[in-house]
Image (cartoon, rainbow, N blue to C red):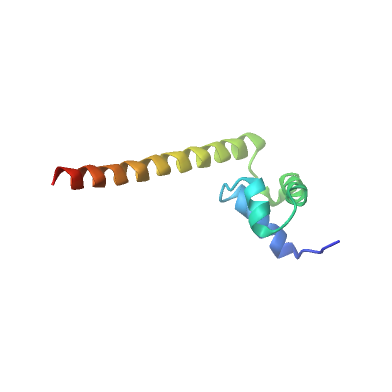
Length: 90
């Protein structure tokens, strides 16, 4: 069984909890099992390390991050479309 440092575990959890990365994607990028990361997330969420946020606040934060990613992608797409239309007008 492979041992991971506490720092590694915290950073892995941070990718999901703070940066909003999907946990399956984070596990794949870190080269760890999804179930391993799920275990670390569960431990994190049941301790006081969760910055004192309630479950509802954490859910809202995840939802807002998801919406922000979507809006950012839409904005970037519109910027690219505007550039293409501007070039086409010339």
